[in-house]
Figure 1 (cartoon, rainbow, N blue to C red):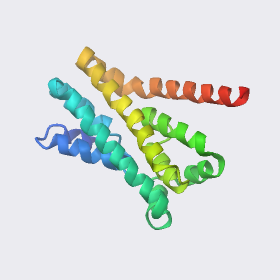
Figure 2: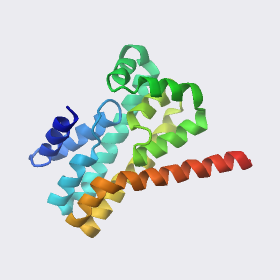
Figure 3: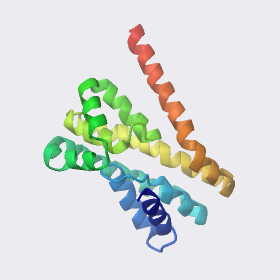
Figure 4: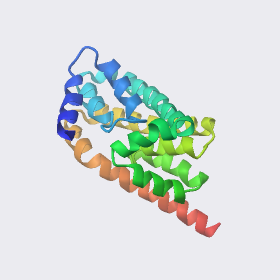
Length: 195
């Protein structure tokens, strides 16, 4: 099932409506969808490198709006909508564990790491942010910074290195972003321990 979903998402990059699909996938990825917008962003950027910055703006704005929708799901419709969505993706148990163990500051840190590296999945953190009543303004600023950094960094990589970087991004960027997110968490933990 995941492979078919991935292949379908990749096929959208060849369509004239690719930019609209990028916005839709970036939006729903942040609240309910399993496949990251990167799988559409990369082939679109390679096909039309002159539009990379525009695609980065579209993906960032749509992703932040999707995050806001996830926040609202967690805040106002957790039992009716968010819980079944999380259960469908097998993320409900992880969500409940995080909900019981993370505080306000840690949740903001997770919002940044999930926005940058999908650690944990962004949809889990956006819904959790709403359920935990994270300030919506602070949530939006964090989402803009994290998601914007991700899409603009991808755009920069594609502009600078083109097609050769595609395979590296598809295979290794998640690992590198994960290491960066882990370092960010370690720095935060060290700061909390020292302070």
